[in-house]
Amino acid sequence: MSRVLAYDLGGSSLRVAVVEGVSVRRMVRIPQTIDRGPGGEFEADPNLWWSNFCAACRQLQAEGEDLGQVDAVAGCGFTRTQVLVDRAGKAVHPAITFQDSRGTRVLASFLERAPDDLAQRADGLSPFHPIVRLLWVQARRPEVWARVDKVLEPKDFMNLRLTGRVRSDLVSQQVMSAFFDVIEADPLAARALGIAREICPEPLSPFAEVGRVGGDLPEELAALAGKPVYCGSNDTWTCVLGSGGLNPGAAYGISGTSDVFGVITRERYEARQLLTVRWGPEQWQLGGPSQGAATKLTWARDRFFPGVPVEQALAESFAGAGDPPLFLPYLEGERTPFWDPDLRGAFLGLNGTHDNAALLRAVAEGLNFLSRLILERAEKATGEQAAHVCFSGGLANNAHLCQLKADILDRAIFVPRSPESGLIGAAQLSGNSSSDIGRITASILTDGTWYRPSAQWRDRYDTWFDLFKSSTEVVRDTSRRLARASSTHN
Picture 1 (cartoon, rainbow, N blue to C red):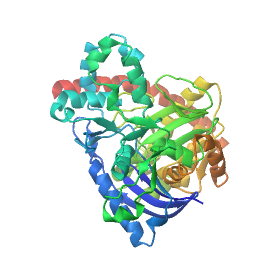
Picture 2: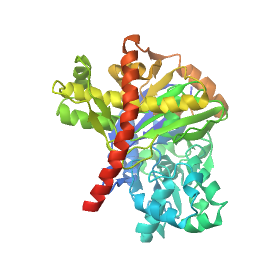
Picture 3: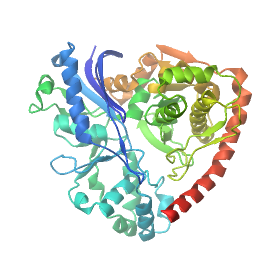
Picture 4: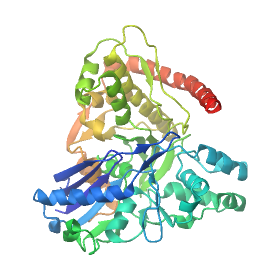
């Protein structure tokens, strides 16, 4: 049985573990933060990720793990995040993370210079698109832009530090590849952009070997010298593999610092404002990321249950009686399925009987109504109903939230035995190939917990979901007007 040093690089923490098969032998978790600026900026220090990785390896060895006995290194990292490096592989700017929407004005300026129909041809072009972040650096930080050689995903940066090789994976690079396919067929758009495809690293299969761990790394990594490092992919793909969801006919949900939802199909489908990405030889993903679930629950806990552990606060909120208000969870704009940085949240239907427990419950429900909206669009496009949803991420550890997801989505929910689906998924890259995906997921589905939807909630949640959709359209218009008013007065 293969033994792998696996890492899962997230926005709120770095997890590093020794994984044997589908079991975590020992894990170290190091908290991390993303810095937020006043103009929609979200950044992190990639060099701190590397320091934390070294510290985690040092701690694993102090706790008795012999890293010389691992067969390989493999990992994953949060996606839609840009790490800009120079020719020497050094980061020249803080990583621009997935929530960042600073590029609104730069995008508008680019579209003024580009052909009129480019926004329609370049699907998903918004302030959240990777190319728009690069346009911002090009326009606002020219001294940084002059040093940029490649733009990497977070796990690509980690693999670069381990092996000295600049590579990425086919899954993560599809967004940029699709954009450049459009641009390169249009000389006017290419001139307006001023960025060449060569800024992207060579893409490999997630199962491919990037290189070997170098021999000139910090002492705590010396035992890893010469071990193969597998390319891996973003945390979404890896968590879906590790939760058993990377199988046609299934849906998946990942709820952590970021929140991602989608369906897996055997053929390519498209739907309005959803992302279509090839995830394997017989696996297509239709769905996408939103602005986060755990962060919104933490926001609500801090306001309605300050100082109370999240688990306790949720237990109190689910024990309450009566209908909570309707919550629209757009606190920082929204990505899938709106791609609108100006969209804002709201509590609707508040009355004098609503207490803190009702408000926290409303937040939990609103997050799942957003997932249901993505599911509805995806299933309409494919013409098939997902058989079940494989659920992972930090929120999958809470039974109340798992049952709530089953009730609101009206689908069976599967939660794998191991809560560390990113680490488990990364470990499966060693000794396997993309043709083994079906076998890997089938094995994981044999060991976990199922949550079935309750018929008693179906009518209520059907009604609330219709209200969620119609209310969102009203709030979208109000949000735009508020954004214009705020811009005028600032």
